[in-house]
Image (cartoon, rainbow, N blue to C red; front, side):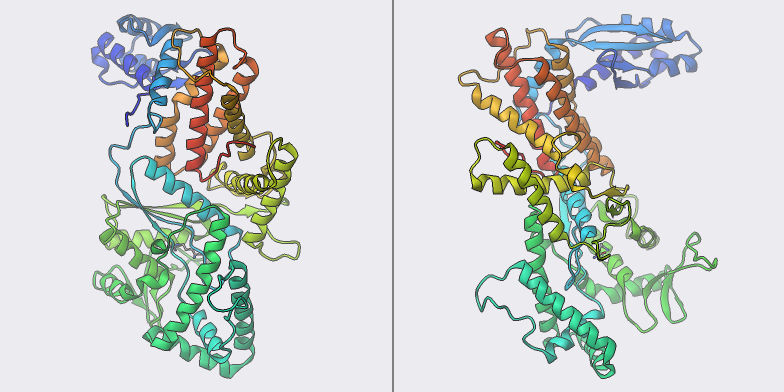
Length: 588
Ligand code: ARG
């Protein structure tokens, strides 16, 4: 494993050296290097520096250029405009750097020197409830962040904070006691139960118990008594509660499986997992004065959180009837994650509509000292999935859309696309690729816009072969694989002695920036930056491919060098897509 400094960082380094040699008084001024259309890079830092030193920027720039010793990376540095530097690197430097990347399994991407432990709270559906389109985003964005952070060397602990506790279980359990066969499986004992069947059982039971709860006062009374039993830890009641959790997990896992996501049982620590801590959490908050009793409830107040009437809206940690809610659980989870899991970062991939909740929970934890300079908490808040009409996504009947239906439709649509383009695929391969393309399309559409923004769920656009879609990237990858297969005896070999065409340079320089994009994506929790980078890889490859014949290039060395560029492109796409949770089939 060898990390490879990018050309951008090498150039930056050379400029910084030139700067301090020419102008010792400038200290460690930043040359402010950017990629540029005119040359390979542009440095704008000298303008600000000249202002600061009250000098002539063009003169300073010239002095800096003269102070940079000749070397084989920088081919040309030119002072332009009011005092910018336009920098062109040599073709050989591009190919050599890529060759160093290619020799490394991580493509030369460095590990983060100050990695810590991040607990990611994501993919948190609710027991006995259908997963809907809102649960998609948390799962997809969270899974991508897990992979990206792990790739940078971060220790990642996954937590699926499923909704598995609350008063609704009194009603469900009581109903099951009175209708004991409602969760039985038609497939008979021992046989595997489908997620579909599990969910339809739960749905039916949920609706029936709700109807009874709303219409039958006596049942309501029995259901409420059942909540008390559950909270008291009554064994029979807990065993029935566990059946709901188990049944739901069968369903969750079937959906995650369809999403091609690896969710592991030990990482599912739902709300109930913190029950034993709730009492103590409240005691600690009350004793430290962070929380106070108000009308019987234990509350935390904030100067800047007020209701429409101007009165403060507190975070309620314990209700006046003694019950604990969502906040007490989240505060206990913070204590657990910091103290027991040794987290240095807590990341919550949760709908932006819960931002106020997290703001108050984090602030409370800070006041209590559970979060501090060593441990930070961040909500990676995501926006709403909208229908084509720009309103929150609903079925024609106005109901929330079932996640499974949506995924099935995406797979159907993608399969049609794959079938139409398929040249030498078997029926079985078409089915498999259809799923990979369909699920990839859904994930990519979600990941390619910044999480905070709402986006329209538009399957036509998502499975389109042109434009910023995963299908476009997958086809670029498959096309490269097909070229590599057709190459016969010709192998990808780097030839730094060759002159590069403009589209080869553009592709090469962009591929060289992979590590920087990874670092940025990880630091900012912004998977859309990686998606945008990969799209650019595919676009630059398309240009390269249309301008530079690969197998029919002029000389055998050129064939090898272009195959080499193809190979690094494919490996970058493959790695980057995998970090986003998207497959790259070898043939499409
Ligand atoms: N189960 C919740 C929901 O469906 C999301 C849980 C988010 N995580 C947390 N620690 N509160 O809205």
